[in-house]
Length: 113
Image 1 (cartoon, rainbow, N blue to C red):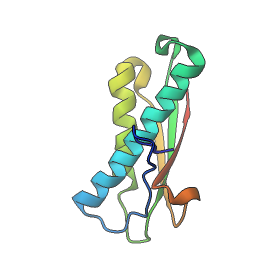
Image 2 (cartoon, rainbow, N blue to C red):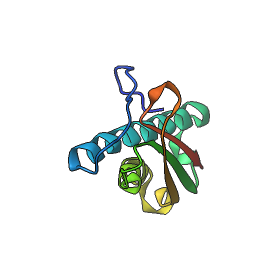
Image 3 (cartoon, one colour):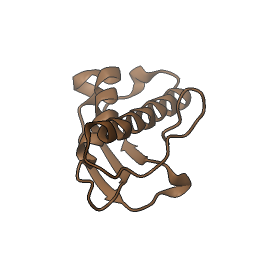
């Protein structure tokens, strides 16, 4: 989930294909990716135990007119590459849009690691 450092959840539907709206989604995907990494560290104890980020799947809460789900998901992909490097962090990815998500979250992301 896209929880920020202060515990607030990033919510709301992405409507317009503007740079500002894409950036809002990008930040939500980035926070979701950071939370996935945090969960991995809690359960593995050391991120060096991660051998490969295999796939990331993102669902973006967006209007029918919004066509930039793939750019939103760059937020998660970029943080995976920043933390794990190219050998471990490079992954396949899928992104889709949906009209609603639980808790009104902007993105929901799952990863196969």
